[in-house]
Length: 120
Length: 115
Image (cartoon, rainbow over all chains, first blue to last red; front, top):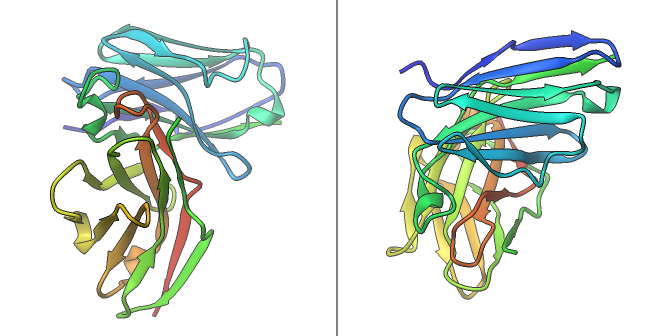
């Protein structure tokens, strides 16, 4: 298996532009997570899906951020409009478990290589 | 909500020496605890987990961690450090008391192993 695939690996955009980050989870995994990592705030969970359904989006910073998972093999994180403070590395991760079920959190998460977003 | 704390931002150790990366937890019941590692320009990778049973858990790359209930700690250890172990290490715990829900990660500890 190729692991979790993210694209693009690097994105540089101007303030106000729309940014779309893409993720392909590992086949057979039923949970997908979007994280953001910055020096100031560390690693933050933005949203996670289970069986393509958003379960917890409490980490999404504001309405400019949206995430979708139209099928089991694809997810997007969109920022519209983007701002310089959105600059960060965005990671997608997938796992076999459902964190909401007993034992579900024991399954390890497999992280993608990340997308480094720079908003100027 | 449950949480973990990593009291050291950075740990420096000479190659060949033992290393310890500290993690303490705050939970209401019996916790599940995890360690992940992030190598430069990479995503996080799972190292090991404690669910139940033996307090000493062995993981990838020769790492192990000891669950200590009386000290509420889950320190990561390795008997002999390698330069290639230099990375960012995260401790994590499920958010909810019944060990469900998303993982809450610590702030991370940067391990630097010097030749």
